[in-house]
Length: 129
Image 1 (cartoon, rainbow, N blue to C red):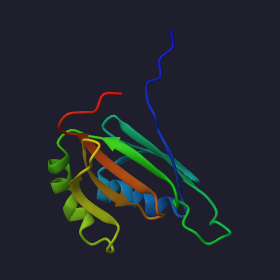
Image 2: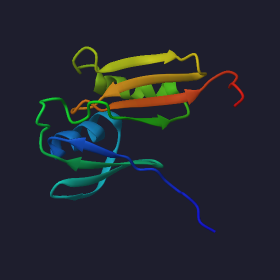
Image 3: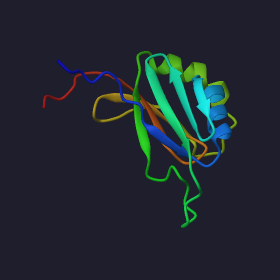
């Protein structure tokens, strides 16, 4: 019997080292593998794959219209832990924890190439499908 065991999104970046530094230093990931234009990062059971790519011909950031969601437990504690590493990012790159109408508490961070990273935790009653 087959089983899907993990999702590891590819995150496009213009500078592999800058993105490794961002995800490791600011979001607590560890780089477990790296080669010329690719790196594999992990934080607990969550993993991402960074892929260095040429800049877009239209000049837009590589992460434009790219996002992924990381489900967590202890969202406020996690934000408090990460906040010192995020506090010097330019305005608009971090949105502190807030409640969504779809019963998630979230905070958002935009990485070095414009990818929106959602961190979220279920709160309250969940609507039935």
